[in-house]
Length: 518
Ligand code: XMP
Image (tube, rainbow, N blue to C red; front, side, top):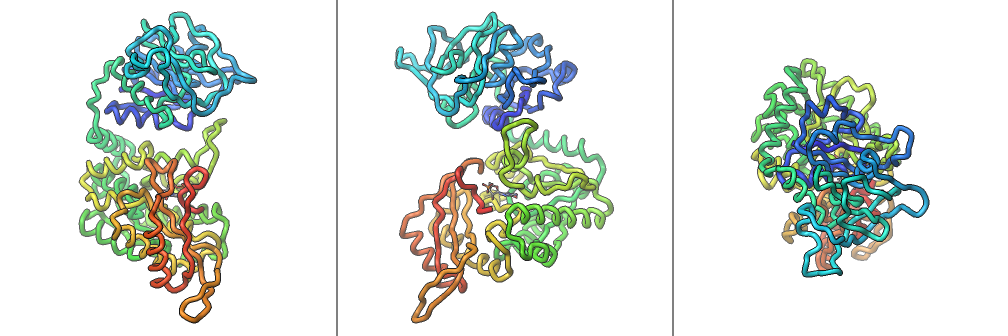
């Protein structure tokens, strides 16, 4: 197995993802929990140092354990990982004015070659060969450590690609794990091949490992699982049920912020198809009461998060003292909610699964999908035998329609939104577009506008339609519907849904927008 030592980069999980795509098993551990004893016990076959926001010149700059360089295993350092490797092995790093480089850059080869660069710099390109990479660094390496050679340079990073071929230490200044380094995956592939990985790890193995970890964490305690009916919590529930059987009870909280007919669909699927013990907690009065008059998005999210926990705690007691709460939290939920200590990762939204949890919650968390991206959860769901029609469902956020109703939430607005959303999704399905789109939904805007229908004046709500394509929800492009589709959909919604007299299409990508409106 491969060990990733995390120095706090925003994209460390993308390294893990690239490795899973290569069918290599890896684990991420933060640098401050990896010491020499840990290394001995873990016995990695190879190690990767992630990037990170620090400078090697900071007081208490994050460092790898000394012994890592003496284990005789290949090491790959990325960005800060490269700098720290050079600093430890006798090279030099420079910081300060003029050394920073952010965004796209081009790396050209030197006269040397190495199998680590297989697939890069095709010989037919001759001296003009170059590869696009994505840089994001403040400091840079100014002198490489003894034993290292330079294999690629960029204008601002003379040591963009370096390696010590004898010790199998590889170090790059850029981030090969991101999409903007188009041939980055190839470098990971070259690295794991050089390290001797066969690439025989699968989602089936992930399932076995996840089940083992759940059993180890939970023992014979009872677990309740917050089931939203979305793909994530459903996959988590089926996985945990497979691990611990009827120690698990699912709680489906109906917060009054679900879509049309959703509660009935979820209940029938889990009770009839999966036979997993399920409590239907109809708490719409509680949630809608607490949200009355609230229009600030963060207050909404935190209120909903807090009430979810109250409700879960109530049911944890009711099932005979559950000690754990299971959630389908995914990696993008974590990275967008949690700021690394000293890191640049700021809180964009308090995703309710993560941000709304009170410090001293009486339940411990079981989050078996915490390291996965959405498409990986879908692959795991398939592995667990969930039907394709269910796995393909668009994501639906925990706070539900609350964050699709900017401004104050009222039952009238929710009712209009539910009906309009159902027409919109029906249109998308009828036109065969559902599976091409990552997520589509309607949002009711906090304004009324004037219209004319028949011979009468209307003064009704405006609706925003949103549809995006995405790989992992971290970035997204708006979906390019045809004008005919948009026109037909707007007409249907206005004709069929009383209370809407105007429809907008949201053409914002992420960034700068987020997928949800709040
Ligand atoms: P944003 O709006 O942050 O959303 O671009 C990215 C993805 O996450 C979903 N989302 C949530 N999921 N709890 C969830 O379970 C939340 O609080 C939450 N907020 C956003 C969103 O629907 C999109 O798929």
